[in-house]
Image (cartoon, rainbow, N blue to C red; front, side, top):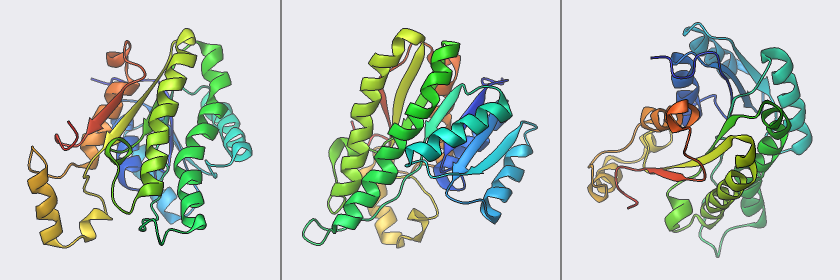
Length: 248
């Protein structure tokens, strides 16, 4: 079943990890995909090629999602290239973990800027187009640490908690135009970064998770397909933890 046939999605930070998995999953359901990252490089070209194998229209764009002017410019170009935007996935994010006593202003500002301001900038950029067509689904990638907090991640946790508050506010504000806004909150997900952790750390994490396994990027992508599709047409303002029960 092609749940997203004929729709167009914009996904930030989709060159790898969760963002790329979402892009590939959307494409497998018939969705055209526009995605952004900071620069057009070999990774972006390879991602385009991978997505195109599903037979959908795809294009990667070099853009800084955290800059309002850049976000508006790239969204305008995407609408010209694709005709419309039906789905926005705000996925771009970084970490700069440190204990509070050692955390620098640069580490704080960088994480808040990329993780939280980008959600504001991209949502503001797509609003006029979704508003005019009277429909849309915005999916913001938060984190379980935005709900529970975490040691040495005050900046990251604050940015992800901010996304949750933003999501609920936009759901209330945009609902009048049939534009839904939800958030996903991944837990311990196996990515290139987590794969580098020592085996004993991985096993320790798994014992804390009721399902006793790490999540996959496909686990996150599956929930995003649900939120992007008409299966969730009466779901808005919600935060869905994808964590195997770590956050209950």
